Image 1 (cartoon, rainbow, N blue to C red):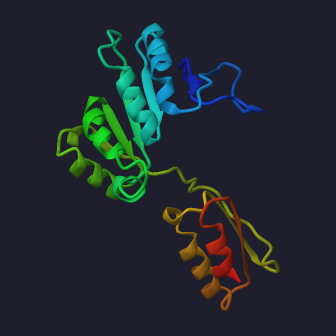
Image 2: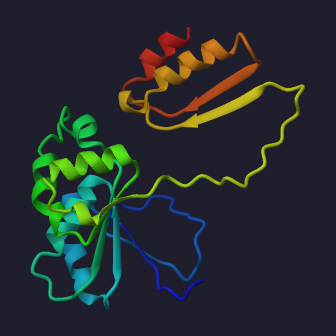
Length: 205
């Protein structure tokens, strides 16, 4: 609407893809099984684009994009968005080596956007102040002007959607509902799947 030409690049194969997008938005599928298999295709796309803002999401894609841009003559503005907390989501997982790759490739970005101040501080410490003037926090969007209306004769209904993993901390949410249910009539619905599913079911029952 603001006269930007928008292109979305999806790493994985498309299955029943039917997004609610404007027809003016071009969607490209690289049809790869793993993110790092897409590096050469990403590089090819970057080399053909006119000067653009390139925005990437999640750690693995950020690293792949940073590798793809190496020695590329085309001048783009590269903006990486960071959601995973390295010390919590990466250090104790099979992707622990991502922390090493972050230290090498994140300094090549023009800007890095974090979703919390805590994450921003951790990333600045991880990069040893090499990117301090390029790391910013933009919180996840919340519509403040939304007016919530409900029938007061009906119970509160809460919906939580996400991966059932420890980092999402559904355990605390369930305990909070257990405390609140003695004060107000409330119902919680959790939609998701993951390794914590059985533990959460056991906690509920």
